[in-house]
Amino acid sequence: MARVRLRNLRKTFNATEVLKGIDLDVDDHEFAVIVGPSGCGKSTLLRLIAGLEETTAGDLWIDDDRINNVPPPKRGIAMVFQNYALYPHMTVAENMGFSLRLAGVARVERDMKIREVASILQIESLLGRKPGELSGGQRQRVAIGRAIVRNPRLFLFDEPLSNLDAALRVQMRLEILRLREALGSTMIYVTHDQVEAMTMADKIAILQGGVIEQVGAPLDLYHHPRNMFVAGFIGSPRMNFLPGSVSIVRDAVVTVNLDGGTALDLTVPAGRLQRGEKISLGIRPERLIPHDSGQLRGRILAVEHLGSTSFLHVRAEGGAMLITEVDAGNAARVHDSISLQVDENACHLFNEDGEAIPQC
Amino acid sequence: MKRALRNKMLFTVTGWLTAGVIFFPILWMFLTGFKTEVEAVATPPSLLFRPTLENYIEVQRRADYFKFAWNSVVLALGSTLLALAFAAPAAYAMVFFPTRRGKGTLLWMLSTKMLPPVGVLVPIYLLFRDAGLLDSRTALLIVYAAGNLPIIVWMLYSFFKEVPREILEAARMDGAGVKDELLYLLLPLSLPGLASTSLLSIILAWNEAFWSLNLTAAKAAPLTAFIASFSSPEGLFWAKLSAASTLAIAPVLVLGWVSQRQLVRGLTLGAVKQ
Image (cartoon, rainbow over all chains, first blue to last red; front, side):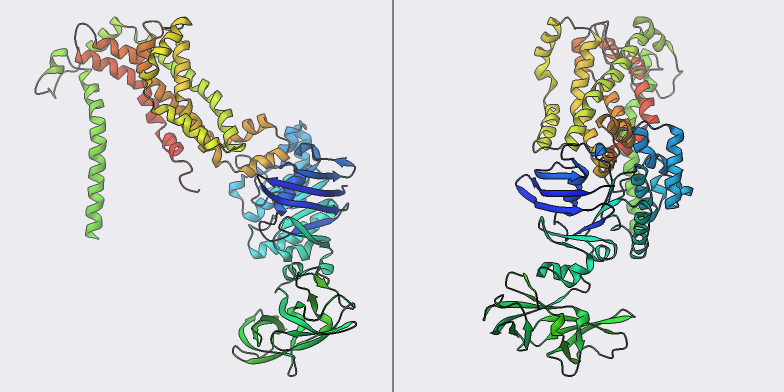
């Protein structure tokens, strides 16, 4: 049971402001993912919540407690670290029971609790081993077990899967979700991997340069990015951007001329764009469809076959690089010419400052 | 291939020669201790001789070896414990609460070891005289501990640095205070380093001669003073001096031999990523 509220949270290291006023609400039982490129301040944010760093300004609330000055163990928070941070000289059982031992819990009760959690994570057979004898996936399980044993009201995960190989990562992703169902705790999860964010989160907060760019449900961010950064960050492969300018404005309909010479009519709220204004047109790879009468022409530079689907990398006539997703059976080959159909309704329009202009 | 073999042989021979050069005086001293005074100074040196325990008996008769040895043990162990008690918190603070001046402080501490001790002999002598501590073990304990402190802080600093920060942070999240961190994590995790640091400190204190000769007379004198007492008024008695020296270095030699693995491991710890 925990509701987390961050209000105007700031953190400065020496003279560098790493977090520039973060506001974020995470509801009870919610799985929130903070995602952003490296150096955006996401780990620092997590460490502030954990109490491993002091806040420079702002308020940290869990339920009705302001926890700015509460020492870490008293916050009722458990954290899973990127490199597991297991105690190398202790067995798995001792690792998991360390917090209970420090809290003065009796041995019998401690062992019971450890066994219970170990059975949830299916690591009972490892209890007598030391971390050095475990595989990466097993270590991660132990680290999660150590967090669960404390029965915290809030779980923090700091890029917990980034040291695992791809197959294991998918498996652990599911396992964390399963665990979350079983425990029903509030969780805040930090990652740089937008796929992890999309697949796991109830709510995603996108962080860049110490500022939250947008908060929302995964599909909400995917379909309605507030700016070019979010549009480009969420989705794989990333959204195509085509530079151009507004040539004609007629009430709610604007005609944009892309740099390759293509003209498109788009419906936007009246008054949002002026004639001559520079814009960027964003379109997702799966909405750019090869078609003989397509508006965009170009040449294929590379073809990536993933088996179930293929990606074509195309250099458009204006010079822009495009990616399009096509059926696996598509016969397109490198150096072929290609025409791509732009679905006007699936376009995202961004002004010169990168802000999204909603379409009607 | 042939060339590689020749190089390997060259290195091996050089290695053995160097070891031989270093070991020879110790061997010679050991042998001389079992010769008579006449044989000891004979030219050419007598290689075949009838070993005698006469020197050892004479040495023990003239000065009580065990009294000196006990002083050495107390001083070496005591000063090491004392230095560790100060160095551990200091190194902890430097590693885990770094400031801009941390590195500079560390270097400055080490630089004090570059000064010749004789530079402060007079002030320290006067201080201890006025405090009534001349010829006391307390005086030497303080001087040894303070003297070895920079090296010990430096070594502990590098061992503590090996402990990943996240492990301590995880412990903090688990509810560990500073005391728990030191006791349950830092000390057990840097045990090999701690052992080799202690060993080095013990050896340095055991072999220290300058201060022990200048600050002690009879009561608190360790083995270094015991050796020195055999090179006095009546002239040099090589055989007895050798016997005394052998007795003096034997304990620390055995200690070093037993723990050389530990010592090397400690001194090279962190040189490569494990």
